[in-house]
Image 1 (cartoon, rainbow, N blue to C red):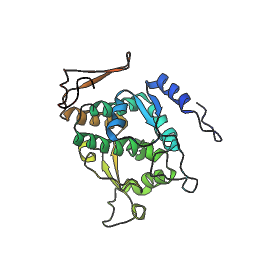
Image 2: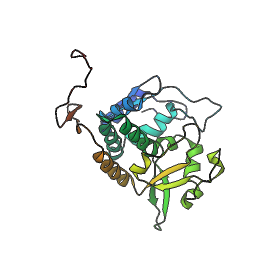
Image 3: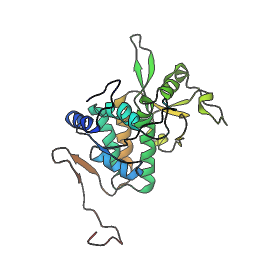
Length: 244
C-alpha cells in the first residue's frame, strides 16, 4: 500500500487493499461526522476517514482523528476479517436505532474500536494487556500509558484528578452495557479502559448487546450486492414528504 518511513500511502491504495481483504472501503471526509452518519457507514462496510495530519508540536497524541490515527490505527485492524465484522456489527445495529441507542452504540464503539484492550497470554500462561483500539495504536504516548505495567494492577484512578496521566487508569472487564453508559474525555488520555478476554469475546458480547436493542427492524448486509436488507416493511415517518 505504500507504507514507508518517508511516505504516507494514498488512501485509495489502502481502500482497494482493504476491499480485497475484508470488503471494507475507506471514504475521505473533511471532518467529524455525526455518530449516526458514521455508524451507518460501517453497516455498508464503509469507513469515513479524515485526511489532515496532527501538528508537529504534538506528535504523540491528537484529540481529533487525523491521517496517522486512520492509517496506523484503523486501517490495519480493518484488514482483519473478524475485526471488520465486529465493526460492521455496530454499524448494522445503528440502522433504525433511536437517538438514545445511537449514543449508547457510539459509547461502545469508543470503548472498543477506538480504545479497547484485550488479553494475550505469553508462553507461561500469564495474561498481558494488548491494545486493539485505533486510538491507542496510533498514539505511542497513550499506548504506553494504557498497556504499561500499572495496567495489570487494575488500580482505580483517584477521585478529583484533573490529569488522568497522574495516576494509573482504571481497567474494567468488557461489558457493552456498562461501556454504553461510561462517559469519556476527548482531549486527554482515557481514565477508563475496557478489557476483553479476546477479540472474539469482544465481538460476541457486542453482538448480544446489539441484538437486545429495541429496533423497528433488523438489517443484514449482502456482500454480493453491497446492499442492506431488512426483515420487515419500514413505516414512513410522519411529516416526511412522499417525494423526499
